[in-house]
Image 1 (tube, rainbow, N blue to C red):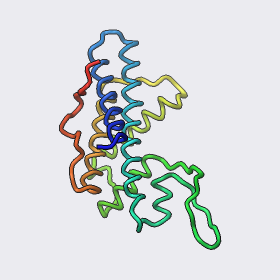
Image 2: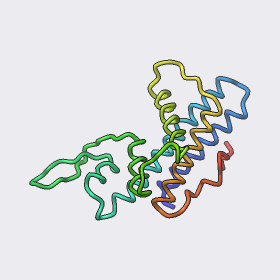
Image 3: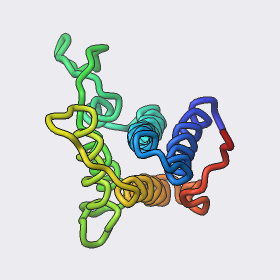
Image 4: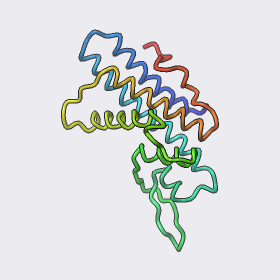
Amino acid sequence: MTKFDEFCSSLLEESKRFLEKANETKNDKAKHAYYHSSILLGISALEAYINGIASDIVLVKDVPIIEKALLSEKDIELRKGTFKLTNRLKIYRLSERIEYLYNKFSGHQLDSVQEKWWSDLKFSLQLRNNLVHPKDEIPIDKKQVEKLLKSVINCLTCLSKFIYGKEFPFKNLGLQSKLTF
């Protein structure tokens, strides 16, 4: 396991621990702060894992440049008649990158009916976006945070199975954190 893999894992564990902390407190202000932290860290963990997967794929020589651009979130330019990746950042939605990875490695399109985690994850990404870019007060409860974390774990489990041929190593842990703070 690389240092980056350990970092990804720690983000997910911290997210799960903040959900546990929310469940342990009777203080509503603390509960909501823990929920917010869990949401932000949960999606950060997902994005970190997706970036790690993308880095693995970009290293393969025969990956088309357009796919490398999407996965590495870099822009492409034409130099002397050849397309080249630049160092300029080109942001793609996390959901688009997940859809691409799923489609490429499963051989079929991602469907919310076949993969319930996908509809749950899209809801969770919207929840996170509403928290990061608030336009109104956002009511958040335990069920929403649990749904978010389960959808992150299920997404990573599914992608891991298709891309690496094995299950995501943290699937069996559920929402229980290994942390004790």
